[in-house]
Image (tube, rainbow, N blue to C red):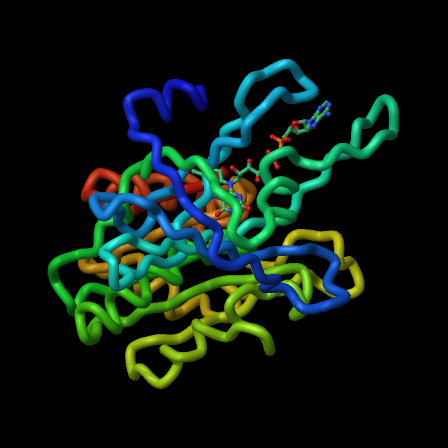
Length: 285
Ligand SMILES: Cc1cc2nc3c(=O)[nH]c(=O)nc-3n(C[C@H](O)[C@H](O)[C@H](O)COP(=O)(O)OP(=O)(O)OC[C@H]3O[C@@H](n4cnc5c(N)ncnc54)[C@H](O)[C@@H]3O)c2cc1C
């Protein structure tokens, strides 16, 4: 599937400019931001798109190349015209339930440990961009837990900095297991906070319920605490919804929004209308 998605997309060489932790020391998860300079001034992308990182083999499972996708969290054009892209990578580990052995994810380990200055092969960008509505009075509901916040970092920069502002209500639901794992909203890097002065923007945090730190962040509770506003936005004719990050978010959203709608059927109908109108976009993995 990865081959199908990356075949026909152009490969690009990039150089790693920086590799820094986004999570605080002592956090249960490690998420790092990698900034890569792409040696191709024609490399263009839109918020919501991903790049494929090609990890050269040979690999333990026999494949020649290991290719994984990462959402683009930011892009700048450097003086020489080359773009500099940021990605946000969570170090993955998997437990083999039969042998009890732990395996480190190939691409996430490679990226988290890549030294500054290293050459990296990328492909893409791939995937549909999150389309930003032309009408600046449209409301935007952005939902992304963990690394799912990455495309919204690019999105918020685009609407508040490149476009110069947004009139509709913009609500970002983001979260992590604990405050230490919050990305782009912690003591180290707090980019999202730069939009908190914007009259139309609010960020709402979801953390895992204490003391069950291993549970997923309580997006359901965060949504319920803002039920009236979320439901009003979802019924408005000019609200666009964007969902990014772990696929579990989709199930959690459907469950809570069915409660708001009064039944699973009513929510399914409303969601189908949003999808049909091109106002519901997802990048989940
Ligand atoms: C569109 C899209 C956007 C994404 N954006 C992001 C993002 O912004 N940030 C982010 O962090 N992630 C993102 N991801 C997820 C990312 O692409 C990778 O899936 C993730 O980093 C794990 O890849 P990996 O190579 O580290 O793990 P892998 O090596 O691929 O491990 C995955 C699987 O292989 C098994 N496995 C691994 N090693 C062994 C072994 N030695 N023996 C047996 N089994 C093994 C594991 O059990 C596991 O099921 C995105 C995914 C998609 C599809």
